[in-house]
Image 1 (spheres, rainbow, N blue to C red):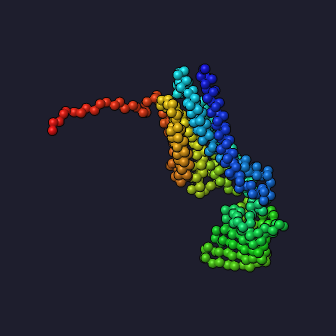
Image 2 (spheres, rainbow, N blue to C red):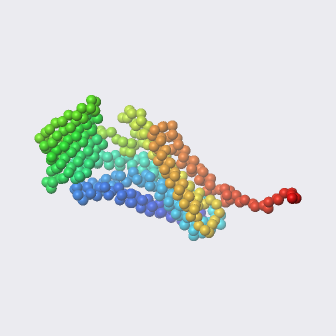
Amino acid sequence: MGFGQVFRYVFVQAAVATVVVAASLGLAIWLTQSLRFIDWIVNRGLPISTFLQIAALTMPLFLSAIVPISCFASVLFTYNKLHGDSELVVLRAAGIGPGRLMAPALVLALLVAGVGWALNLYVLPNAYGKFKDLQWQIRNSFASVLIQEGVFTPIDDRTVIFVREQSPNGDLLGLMVHDSRDRDRVVTLIAESGALASSPEGPRIVMLNGNRQELDRRDGRVSFLFFDRYTITLDAAANVAVGLRQRDATERFLWELLDPADIVDTRTRRVFLAEGHSRLATPLYAFAFTLVALAALLSGSFSRRGQTLRVLGAVIVVVALQALAIGLTNLAGRNSALIPLLYLVPLAISAAASTVAVAPPGWFSRQIVRRPLDPGPAVRL
């Protein structure tokens, strides 16, 4: 069997395992994230097409983190299986060295890294931007979907609605709206009943027989207003077109993160800068994770007892690296001087793991030659 056949044999097994693991993890996360939208379909009348669109647009957010881990799990599984079936021993006896044994996994890691860069640099911001636009439209077109009986429902970051009961004809009974969109003047409205209405500015709530309480934070005074009829626009905080709203870091492309022309705040610019570099650096962990798996399974001598401890050690190292990557991104958002660590950590781990993987057996764990102890000169008592 030539090296080309060995390469294809190992690569196909690892690639198929990567697809299966990524699909399984993606489906599991998709199901857990989609459960919160099920009630909107069953009880609130949200169209199934909108639900499927939301689920599809949020998937790239999880895939960018899943793909490197899937590559690690597939390489670990494939090479451990080759070891358990003694195929690695046969391949080594045939003269195939560690470098060639690593080649299929490294090519797979390169492909996975390419997928990661495509997700981070184009698919993720494009899909998540459409998701945020769709979310804005739902808040304006399907406001009744968001309102639940007996629950304090946030309509946006600064507006909360409570409805005691919703009648079959759509009337809202026992209604309260807390509006803090104007930070200097916080308003709380309580009404016996109300109803949702549409307008060009967005959905409105018409409130009947209630009172309006306004807190002026500048002087601490509270004013009361009793009304028979009052109308409040839910999305007046935005009050802008979808295309003109300020977009967050996740829905921006790389050049918009590295140099956000519409952001003046220094802290926000640091967060965006760290997010941009994180998108470039995260796919490098596909190589780091793969090389950790290869170092665990290819280094050292063959053991018939299996490699359970090595597999467990590789898993622990990868979990620690994933946590470190998340922590470094958060720290870099506060201190831009730490941004180089986003690249140095995966590159350093890759270099160290590749050194371990190609090292000859016994290079790291040298045997201790036991010699008889010299008792020294006899001592007479």
